[in-house]
Figure (cartoon, rainbow, N blue to C red):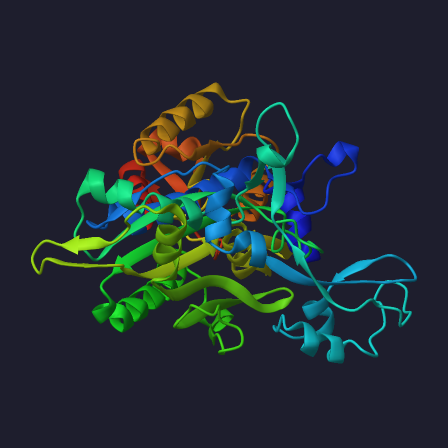
Length: 446
C-alpha cells in the first residue's frame, strides 16, 4: 500500500484533500492523472451499462433529496455501524472490525469484545457496542432547525427509485429495464482507512434493474456475471486477484433474496469491490407506501399490474481505482535498472501514447514530432508530449503512469518516415511507419 500511495502522490493520481492545512480524514483529491483514469473508468462503465444497452436509462439525481426519501428507505433509522469508545484514551473504533467479524449484531459483538483491548492505548476499557448513524446531516435554507434538516445522500440508489415513475412515464420502457447513475455519496465513517478504500466522500456507479418476479433468478445471475466480465475483460484485472463472496443469511439485508460481492485482493487483503443484490420489491413498495404515489408497473400485453422486483449492480469508483492500481502495479529490472510501471489496459490508461523528439534542441526533429503527435491525436486525443531530459527518463515517467506506447522521432524518421515504437510492459522497440503506429493504437483501444 505504501508504494501505491507514494506513486499516486508522485505521479499525480491522488492527493490528500486540504493537504496544506494538514488534510482531513476520509477525503481525497484526484490529481491530473487520477482524474483522467477515473473518468475513463466511469465512461467505460457508462458505455457498457447504458449506451450499449437498449433498455437501461441514465439519470443524475440531486445529492440532497427530501428527507422523507431516506425515512422510507430505512436509512435514517437503520444506516448504522457498530461503534465502541475507549474510556481511557477516547479513541473510537468500528466494533465489527475490532471483533474481526462481518456481523453487526450488538449482542454478539458485546460477547466478542468483552476481553478486547483498545488498539490505540492497549487498555481493556471499551464501552459496550452501540449503533452509530453514518448519515451526514445538513440544513436547507437560512434557519438551522428541525424543519430544515436534510441529509447528504449516503448512496446514489435513492433517486433512482423515486424517479422510477418519471422514467416510465417519459420513456415508456417495457420490463425488464434499468435505471443507472453515477455520482457522489457521503458516509460519516467511524474510522476511514486504507487510503481511498474506506472514505467519507465517495463516488458510486449503480444500476437498478426492474424485472418481473418470474425472471428473478436468471436476471440476478446475468448481472452477477456482468460484474466479473467487466472487471476481467474491460479493465484487465487478473482473475487470481478476484473471488466471489456470497452473503450469508445474517449478512444480508432482511429484504434481500440473494447478495454476492466480487472481492478483490487489495494490499490489505480480499475486500468488497462490486456488489450484486436481489432486492425483491422492497424499495418500490416502501416508497409507494410512504409517498402514496402508485409505483406499480402495468404490463400492456397481459394487463397485469404489479410492483417490479429489483436486481442491483453497485460499485464504488474509488475502490475500482484502487483495484486497478493494485492489479497493475509492477516492479522489474530493465536495462540493468529497477523500474516501476503500471500495466494498465490501454482502454483506461490516462495517457494512450507519448510522442517525443530524440533531441529537443533540433528544430527539424521537434517539428516532425509535432506532426506525428497531431496525426495520432486523430485516433485519440490523449497523446502526451515529453521532451524533458534524456529519452530513458522520459520512458520511466511514462511507465509509472501506465502509458502503453512511447513514440520517438529521430533522424531516421526524417529520412524514411519510420518512428521508434516502444512497448511499456516489455520495453521492446520496433520501427514502424506512422500509419502502422496509428493502426496499432486504434486496435489497442478498440
